[in-house]
Length: 146
Image (tube, rainbow, N blue to C red; front, side, top):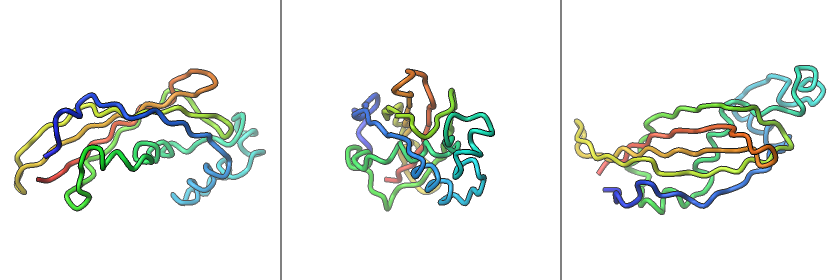
């Protein structure tokens, strides 16, 4: 059972410098061959200041800090991904620095066919450090079986 004291808990803010290599490496990993993620000239031809970030890139920021699971005491063997939702506010490109922070929004205990479980909702919010613009909110749902 996940301790309810973690509702509202905010993890230490982190920064990530977005590099062309990170973007193209991520695009390659998700098998997106769009040249805009690999070629600066193509990106600029399409109106970007540099190579843009693929829409799902931000998902890697929530759990890039491995202490998320250990802090909450989550046993990976009992963990199930409950889904995610991403809200986009502004475009980010290589050369930008994103400041992001994860907050535990809610922890609810439920009873299901497999027994008791905790439903955890965490939100990671990111801002462009240089412009101050909000870039994204990533809402993650996790299911942890007892």
